[in-house]
Length: 432
Image (tube, rainbow, N blue to C red; front, side):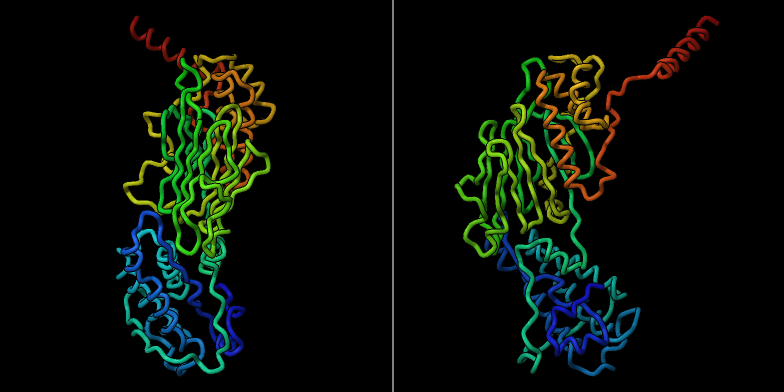
């Protein structure tokens, strides 16, 4: 279990030598309001009150009370303080259920719910059983020393690690070239989408790509414009809008700023560039997110690494997201090389792509598709950059290379032989 002794004063540390139990700072210490929530709903979310009641109900477990009174009473595993802790966690869970409706979209609330579940499992607490009554407020314990430092509400990774004792899980999505979309769940689609389509639409982030045809005679399109909205989050950032178009890749938000504003956590959102006009990186530490935007071959590429809880914070009405579900079936194109009409031959495109993409995976196939259709060898750079982002952003490199079923692999002579023999057999039956 996560070692909490370093967070406590010397007085409380003496008590912790007997047993280990979760500090309230592991659950949550912040609240926020997204752009989609009005001020009334925010004022009704009582997650901070639930946090405070949990803090108070566990004070006796850290330094006061009779040890005998802390045994038994709800933890299946038994042991010192397990009963008192389980009662406190059940009360905490009950409090979050009561305020659930008014806390929709509040990251502190969702973090607390997941944290309670984890801690109840760690301490073998049953879901049913006695709860801890709300303790009476009183003066601080004498000699307890200063309270442990509260986690930075605008540092998602640090806050999550204190809560769970491990780093958060991350997801990766990318859009480049035609566009080709790699979803969070490793779907890899080539899309014919024209106009504006949402890549992401959740409680914290909105990303929209606008595409137009790459050629008048082709179904293929390329992304010409990207709009990204970082939604308002109390204590951390003002709402910020970033907009990029081909030949206009600014290193600042729409209002001219390069951070999240004047709020205490404004620096948790920043924008920077190492190659003006071609590359922009946006870091949103308050939601554990990094975004890279590139311009190559007259198109825009988008790549993101985002905390899983953030990516999943959306409602049923926000179900159309290319990063979540990939391209709708009606908008998908095959990357098959057979019968493809292009500006240059497929063999030439394969030779150009092979130089930087030796593995004939989905990125290689996408490269061949783009180069052959557009006739522009610079599309090789877009595919190579997308693969490099995936290598840096994916938590599991075993899933780096994808091999979709419509890869358009060349058929071997054996593959032709099977249908040929089948056809001859059918013909023989007809003759008989």
